[in-house]
Length: 225
Ligand SMILES: [Zn+2]
Image (tube, rainbow, N blue to C red; front, side, top):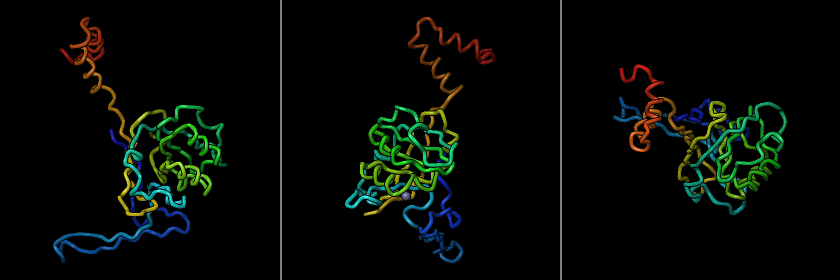
C-alpha cells in the first residue's frame, strides 16, 4: 500500500512567511496550440519539500549534490501533537534512531535544538515534520551541517503512528538548489489475506507438518469448500 504524504501544489498551498507565493499560468491550450502546458513560479521550499545543507550551511551541499539514498529509507512517526511549546527530549523515545528517517506528527510544533542534537548523535538518517518548519535557524543548522535532509510540510503522518514503513521523497535535480518540492510517500507491506496466503504457499515447501497450512484452512473456512 502506498500512502501519499504530500500536500497538493497550487496557488492555495500555504506559504511560509516571507517566501514567494505559487503562480501557475497557462502556457499552451489544446484548442489553440494543440497541446496543454503551464508555467510554474514557486520557491524551492513550497508545499511538501526537502531542505538541502546549502539552505543554511555556507558551502553546504546543494540539492543536486546529495546522494539519492538520503531520500529513501526505513521510517517511523513520533506523536508529539500534545503540548504547545518546542518539542523536548523527554517527549521522544530514548533509542531506535540509527539509520532511520524520523518523522514528527506535530500539530504545528517545532523541534528544540536539544532534540536536533540528539537525532544527529543517535545517527538518524533524515528528519521530517508535518509542520511548516522543523524549527528555528539553530535546529536547521544542527541537522543540515550533518547532511540530514529535512522534509517539511508533510501530511497524513498521524495515519502511520505505530507502523514501520519505507519513506521515499525524491527532490527535483535543481542545479545548486537549496531544496526542492518532493512527492513524499510511505510504502507499507500489504497485510491480511494476501500475505497470509503467501505464507501457506511457502509452508507447502518449508513446513513438512503442514501446520501453517492447516491453521490457515481452519481460519479461512469457506476457502476450500
Ligand atoms: Zn525548507
